[in-house]
Image 1: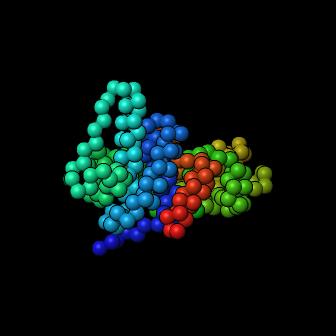
Image 2 (image 1 turned 45 degrees about the vertical axis):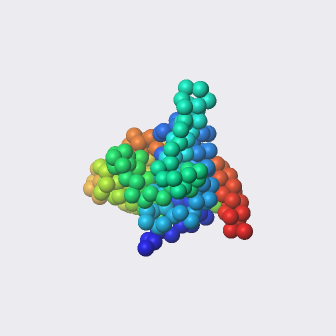
Image 3 (image 1 turned 120 degrees about the vertical axis):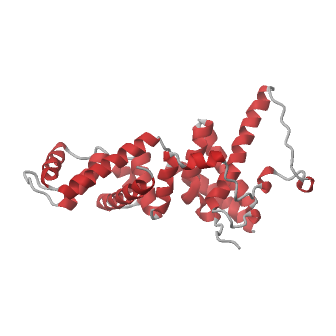
Length: 183
Length: 86
């Protein structure tokens, strides 16, 4: 019974920052991280029919991304000629399928995941996801990217007083949310 | 906010407090905020939470994508979505 629906049109707004943040802590290069995130969205689009709706969209995309990151490390290893790469499929039936088509394990919750969930960055992103999209966008631009008020106002076509009202609401909600889940 | 006004209301104080988190408040604004905080318990609490939030986010070292980068990604993904649905 599907509880979650999939909507690729919303992916970038909803998950790109989260996925990017996840990737950068693992590959440590912003260009590579951006490429991996983009690849993940494309792969997700290709294997949309495998999405069963048991896990959230975000969990599903993360499981694709994890494989992309592993692939990336395999590739740079084999470039060095130091590692032999063998990809063994567990069942003969799907032999030869692309990795991304094999992603549909909604209960892929390892100890590593549980640990990451307790990490601060995750807590912050979880709280950001609860904000209305506009509030989250303004808050991220101002707080994380550190854009000047003027720049944000121009980009989003809002007035400065608009911006401060949005920031105030976002900060209040974020402080409450993090208080419950982190502080 | 006109100058030489020593007493401000709470919503104004909170606004200055928000600005302080981004180093957008002027010296004068910071002074009258401090005065307000002396006698206003509610705003003291808000200021404390607000500063904690700033610290927490700085500590987390989280990152997000530049808007231009996101827009470019959106363009590419939109194209791919159209190809898939065709």
